[in-house]
Length: 57
Image 1 (cartoon, rainbow, N blue to C red):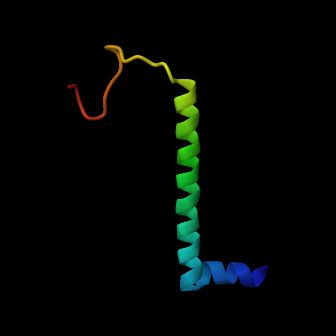
Image 2: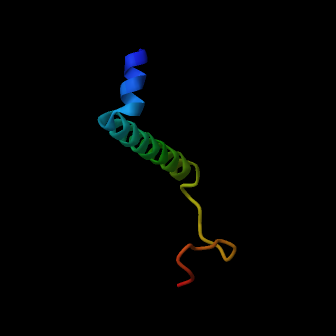
Image 3: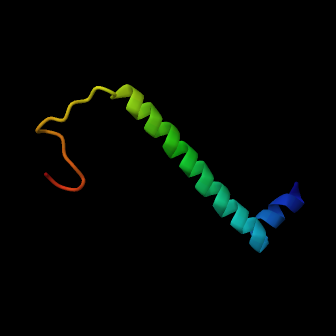
């Protein structure tokens, strides 16, 4: 186990695997949370109080 952590944090390929693994975990979490949000607010109608990131149309 000690060799694994030494490889993961000191070797170049270990660090690349760590970064790619972190990106995949974040991608999976964002996908799951987006799905949960869509199922919870599936019938949300836009009102005057809602704001848009890209401005008013």
